[in-house]
Image (cartoon, rainbow, N blue to C red; front, side, top):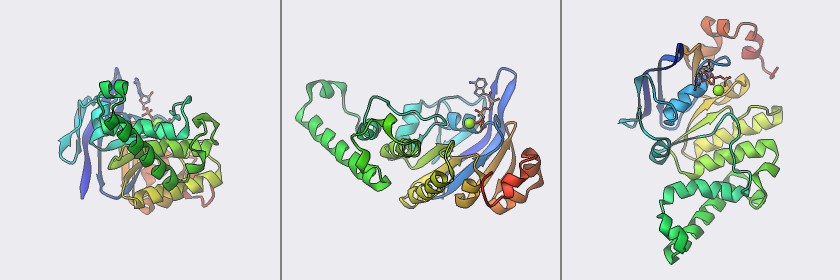
Length: 261
Ligand SMILES: Nc1ncnc2c1ncn2[C@@H]1O[C@H](COP(=O)(O)OP(=O)(O)OP(=O)(O)O)[C@@H](O)[C@H]1O
Ligand SMILES: [Mg+2]
């Protein structure tokens, strides 16, 4: 079942067309990859999907709801959450607090309740904490719950960011280069983790430069180059597509390699 439908999506910044006539659809339960050279427009697609940028033209439909012109918090509440290319955790919060903050967007408590700490509020808070704990156990971060986020090893900070996105209970999780800066072992663990997330029922859209990761776990891949879609399909088709090889000129080795360069 198709849950996300992007059609003719275009955005211009002054004279630069960062994304040009981009089409993409995502079905429930898929892991869909978006790849392309630096500056191709991948993150800009996520920024439009999450309401950070408003498209110049084209449409984004999530389950028949038009997302153009929606606010980021509305879109998150509807069921689309993301991580960022550069880690954005709350540095002065513990691991569990980072997750609890995200699930609070769901509980929609009135501010006055927070001030008065009503009985209902305390109950909600306990529920939020217990949900956060369950999630941390699920993703293997329970032992770190009282550590401050910046003290975690890099790979676990990335995992925590994803856990935080999961805490808002979205249907779709957008991951912007979750394996950036990771070594081979951490990258394989991330691949396994993304497959687990999918098995938990989340639909995943993944931007990633690491071809082995993308080709190893994605059901379908979209390839952007200078803002335009140059190929789309299953990993095997995309890997052998001449336009894709051309876009990655000099990087064919990386596209086909069995080990990461
Ligand atoms: N707010 C903005 N104002 C002006 N130009 C922008 C803005 N956001 C993005 N761009 C430009 O749009 C193009 C696409 O950027 P984007 O960040 O989407 O690329 P990317 O595919 O995510 O690249 P990378 O792999 O390096 O992360 C770039 O040329 C970038 O400079
Ligand atoms: Mg990017």
